[in-house]
Length: 101
Image 1: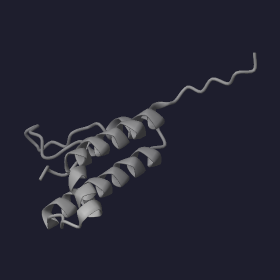
Image 2: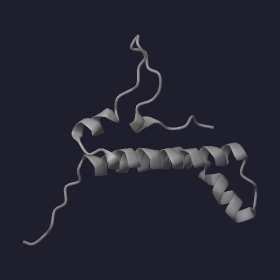
Image 3: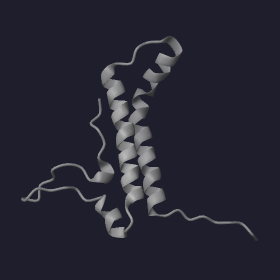
């Protein structure tokens, strides 16, 4: 009938999830941004730094997703780095978000 159907792929879905995660991390401090806009109350530097770190992390993760040219590279974004004993040493690149304020 001429109706186009679009099926989103792994990258599109992963980027949508990154954007949703970033929005969820920013949401608890959104009220401070609104308050600043409405009445001029300053936002604490720790909150501003955190919000900037979330946006930076989101951009970094989205770029890593976009730059993955093979399925193996994409899957590697979900691998948690480990030391020689198999103990985690950080977050998987797909989940490397800043600590909350």
